[in-house]
Structure formats: C-alpha cells, structure tokens
Image (spheres, rainbow, N blue to C red):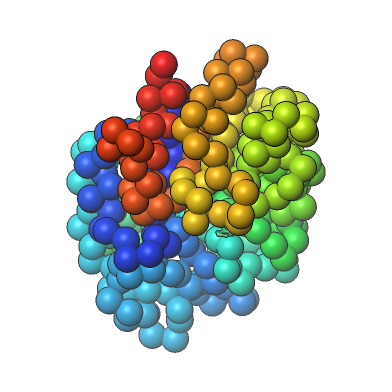
Length: 304
Ligand SMILES: CNC(=O)NC(=N)Nc1ccccc1
C-alpha cells in the first residue's frame, strides 16, 4: 500500500527535495494548477505557495520561476517517488465549459508538464523544464463536474503515445456519494487512484468511524469504484495530517486511525490503496511522542 501526500500549499513550506528525503512518502501531489484556461488557446494559472520566485509567463498566471521544483523533481524520482501535478484545489477558479476547452486544457498540461517533446517546445511553456510529471491529479472542489471525463480521456490518449512509460490519473473527491464534481469523470474515464477526502464533510468522514455513527462510507466508495471505468482503481483513505489541516473535529490521532485502516484493509484488500494526507508541511510539524511525522506514523500503521 502507498502513502500519498499533497505538497505546495504548506505554510512556510520546505522545498520538494526536503520531503523526498522522507522514506514514508510514495506519491507526492504538487498543488496546484489553480486557474483554468478561460478559453481555448488561453493558458492556465498556477500556485505553489512560497516555492516560485513570483514571476509568471507573459500574459498568464502560470508561474515561470519555479527553479526549486524543476531542480528537485529529478531528486525525488531517483528516490522512487511518484510525482503528480494536481489540478484544482480548494481556492481554485475551476470551470470547464466545453469539450474543446477540456481537450485544449489536457493538451496544454501534457505538452507543458508531460514528457518533453521538441516539436512543441516553442508552442508550450515548460515550467518544470525537461522534467515530466508522472500523472495528473484532479482535486476539483466546486464549479460542476462536466467535461472532466473528456479531459482525462484526452490525457490518456497522450499517455498511449508513450507505451514504455507509465502515467497515472488520480482524483480527490469529497466523501459524500455521488461527489458532485468528480462522479461523472469517475464513471466515464479511467482513474488509477481515488483518494477520498474523508474530512471536511460531515456524515461520511473518518471521524464518523471513530464516533461509531456508522456513516463512514469507505465501503460505499468501493462500490463506486467497482461500477466505474476502472473497477481495479485503488481507493485511498484521505486524512488531514494535523488538527489545523482541516475544519474542526476532522483530525484523527494515529491511535484513532489504526483500527480504521486495519478494518478496511481487511475488508477490502484488493481495493485498499493506502492513505492520502493533506498535507506535507502539516504532517512534518505534527510529531508523535516518539518523534515521528504524521506521515511516518501512518506508514507504520499501513505496515503493521
Ligand atoms: C485534497 N484537497 C484537500 O484536502 N483540500 C483541502 N483540504 N482544502 C481545505 C479545506 C478546508 C480547510 C483547509 C483546507
């Protein structure tokens, strides 16, 4: 099983390579491409917190000076990390209004952040230079779920152009079923990982498991996966990595997480993919009594 974590929005966060030193982290979601192209031919915008030098490509909100990120991605990859580029995020202005726009956005992301393709280097920017991400994560939190299946299917058609490389698609739905933003995409396009945000939504959260309300719905999410375009997709338990990383009441201590993981890893060994954490800096600053980061505590739970 894997531990996935978001990085890019942490308060006074350390650079990516700092987190790639942590052996407990398997998948790192770089957040975020937070502004969607307003039309075909227009560029998206990005925000990686304190990690870029504040410069943007002319006429766009796409950050251009993220030297720490393009320097660090190779370090992370040589340590075996999977690096995903996350689209959306809590503060995103995200809206797809047409198939054409969805296809354009997918192409832009692929030629800008996917494998370097000499034929396109004068048409598209390379914010991470020659680095390619390992896939794209959809953290769509509002503005309606249309056209994401189109975008993901387009990305997959690009993946197929590199048959000897593996690229991934993941999504971070809220725990209520159906998730307004991503249920259509999950039904109609192929996801490798679904990390459900079992926090910030009452009536289906990991807190419900601890309180014994019976409404924690990991089992129902297994059914959603089984009925989706990829019944083999891995389902992750998404959790806040500290009290301050989520709305009040949704944080679970490692002691509270352990029985949840044991129960559902046992019930659904095939679907259970691991744990997703929001997010890296909160995890780093949330040490257990014996000095483990929250992510390290989670990794211990996954492997005990
Ligand atoms: C995977 N995306 C998130 O976990 N987003 C997220 N946690 N947004 C947020 C919502 C409320 C308080 C803090 C962060």
